[in-house]
Image (cartoon, rainbow, N blue to C red; front, side, top):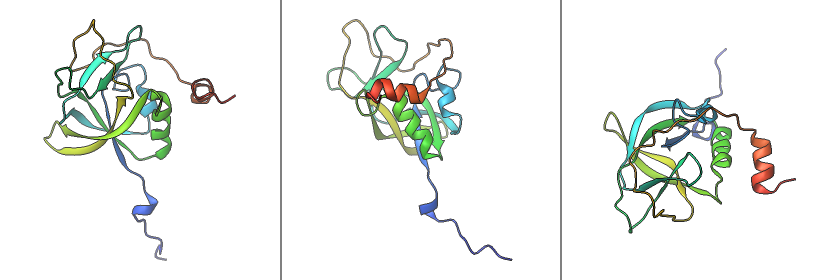
Length: 157
């Protein structure tokens, strides 16, 4: 018997996500993207300034007229599960710490793709740093309990 049900665009979910920090392969928080599909290395087509958060080991990017921006290096993922994007949003502290915005990136095969990226919600330019193009630091891998994170960070008790 023929399957009369045909999958249409309303039945599927697909977003692209550009990551440039601890969510990249080999970094401590990459496991959050376990259900995402790695596409390729990528670079932003717009210029951003990337800095390392003081007293932490993670980067952030900002759009700024006050510093010389760069095309930021990172990785591109295909997100096929809305829950995955929700977990990443919670991990990144959207909308309080980071904004999730659409940007364009260029893949290592010269293809331009619109992707979500996390941009710091407040423009913070540290006086003791110069902008960087690629985040290379690694730390010990950690596991995130998203229920606990939501309760603490968002005040749900």
